[in-house]
Amino acid sequence: MTIDDFLSQEDKNNIVKAISNAEKSTNGEIRVHIEQKSCTDEIQRAKEVFNALEMYNTKDKTGVLFYINIKDNKIAIIGDTGINKKVSTEFWKNTIDIVISDFKKGYFAQGIINGIKIAEEELSAYFPKTQDNTDELSNEISIGDV
Ligand code: CA
Image (cartoon, rainbow, N blue to C red; front, side, top):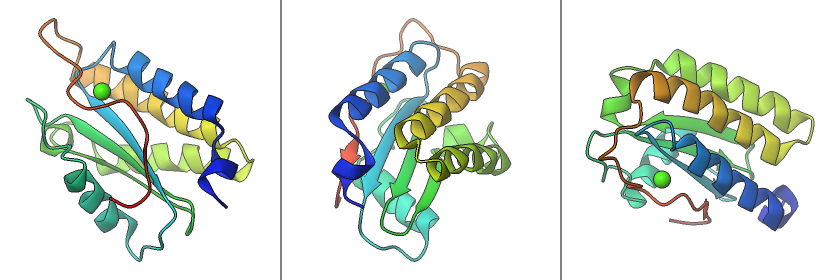
C-alpha cells in the first residue's frame, strides 16, 4: 500500500485538525509519522523517529508520537519522559488495539483520529492546557524516511 492509498489529502487535513483540536485541551504535543520502510521493532523505530523529529523539544517532555508503518502493518505510540511518568504503556497498548481494529475495517484516517481523541482524553487529564503553553511541535503529519 502506498501512502496515497492509505490516506487522501482530505484524510491528512482531518488528522492535522484532530491534532490541533486535541492540543486545545492539553499541553501534550501529538505527532503522527507514517512510513513504508520495513522495521523489525516498531517501538525501537518509533524512538528513532521521535529523536529524528526532535520531539524531545518540549518544556515538560510532553511529546507523543503515533508511529505507523504501512509496509509491515505495525503501530507504536510512545511518549516522552514527562508523559511516561503519568501514562502507562498499557494505556497506549489499548489505544493501539482500538486504532488497529479501525484499520482492519479499512478506516485508516478514522482509526488515527480515534487514537488521537483517546490520547487527548488521557493527556488533558494529566497535562491540562495552560495559558503559557505554545504549539511546541508541528501538527503536520511526517511522512517517509527520517
Ligand atoms: Ca503541536
